[in-house]
Amino acid sequence: MELAQRIRQQRLDRRMTIEQLAAGTGLTRSWLSKVENFRVTPSLPALFKIAASLGTPLSELLEGLEAGPELCIVRKGEGKEFDRDPSPGNNIHYESLAHGHQSRAMEPFLLTIPPHGGRAQLLPHQGEEFLLVLSGQVSFDYGEDQFVLDAGDSLYFNGSTPHRVYNPSKKAAQVLCVFYVTN
Image 1: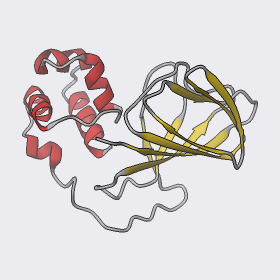
Image 2 (image 1 turned 60 degrees about the horizontal axis):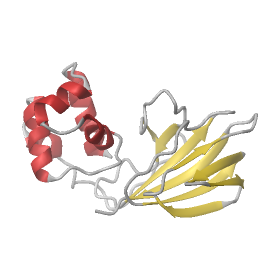
Image 3 (image 1 turned 90 degrees about the horizontal axis):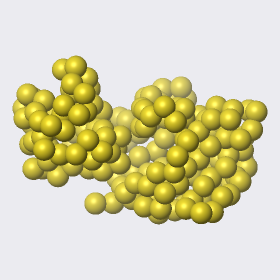
Image 4 (image 1 turned 45 degrees about the horizontal axis):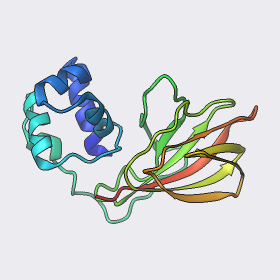
């Protein structure tokens, strides 16, 4: 996640569009968007292309990513806001719950989904995902299936099947979401 944020921030700092980055790297706009939204992890050759197009040393993008504490405590309200999917069809607020631990295999988030909000379209991603509804009620679309989940309900699934979570109710919902990205 940290690498994805660094790439996006470097691009924005240089006032580059994702299309300009794609043109400079020879990589597709959609693939770069997935990199910036932590849906795919770029290979080392792709990172070289991205760094070169951004005009930054690769070492700057990677610096400190493996460093960090073995134990990471994030107190209530101290999560780091993360814009996982900045599309107009998504108003879910993502709060990273492990941003202080750099070499993690899982990516836990607290999702706050406003009334009648969520993701407009079904999207797939690499890896696996776990959801636990902490409060409220959400609907979950998984391929052609739809499920209603209440507080205390959970599910575990393969992220490669297009899916989405949204809140059909009049009250905000909170969901613990854990991504495990396999390579």
